[in-house]
Length: 178
Figure 1 (tube, rainbow, N blue to C red):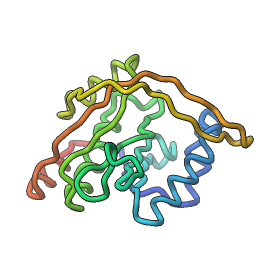
Figure 2: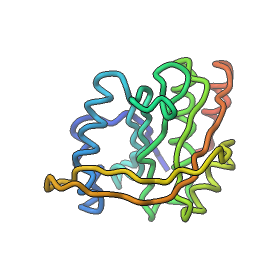
Figure 3: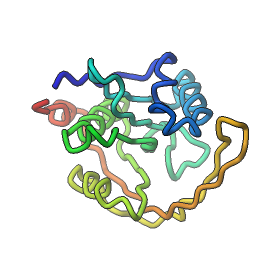
Figure 4: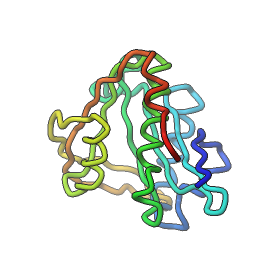
């Protein structure tokens, strides 16, 4: 499998809708991309030559909510998904490792994320990757969909955290057989 992990470009935004499945997040994706252009976020894509983008992971490095990302030591992972046909192949783990290694290079020492309390497979991936449940999160948030309507999400979640190692651990994170 010739998997390429790279930063998302403007021309990738339409592909992040995954054939319409996530078109309701169009404005969120555009906002995240603008945030990346300001240096406040890094957006990652997992791409296969024959399939296109099969995974994504967004990292918010600076946020108005310092409990998520403070711009210096703590960053927040969100919008992390892998197309169902490509799960179980190590793509999610590879995306996570690349994002963590990049954060270590940037001087970050901790990463947090939220995972739905019902998504046991994702929670197990995070736990195998060194994350631990730190607290509960009510999972209430809203966004403007592609039609300009506010949508409210109520998805109770676990807040998970991981302490990142020193810069010397970057190479260990990147060891991957795929």
